[in-house]
Length: 138
Image 1: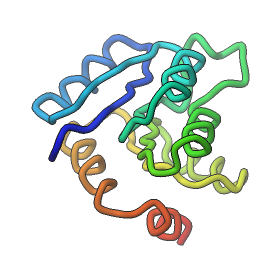
Image 2 (image 1 turned 90 degrees about the vertical axis):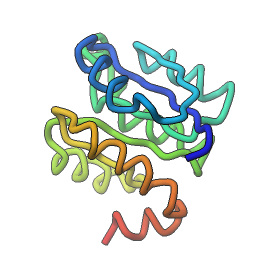
Image 3 (image 1 turned 90 degrees about the horizontal axis):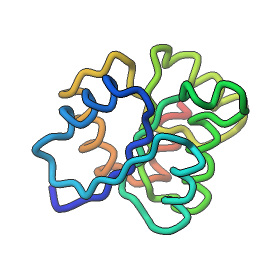
Image 4 (image 1 turned 180 degrees about the horizontal axis):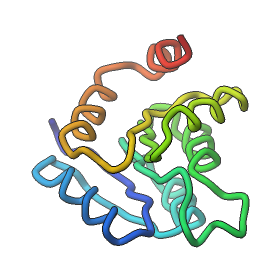
């Protein structure tokens, strides 16, 4: 895999460590954000090949911000960016996306299996965005 860029959006230190271990050894240019607002600033500045984000961050409980809004924001600016959403309940996340008519991101169940996350990242690059959306919608 050639050098790719990753924006990691995670505020929980143990999960951040797990994610960093999961992508260790991959050729990645890594940026990170603890808040959705900071992630949006990064995405406005530049393209990322991957954005990995939580469905919800602890500091955003009082706001309506979540990974779904971030994924939507990313896809508006950079349709080719692969968004990977982390959640303990993938079925509920899919239902929320389908209910809003948004393009589906890749969804990875927590706790994170490093091999599975790497596999999702590698597969996401092989599948064009239009085909991915048709596949996920089926």
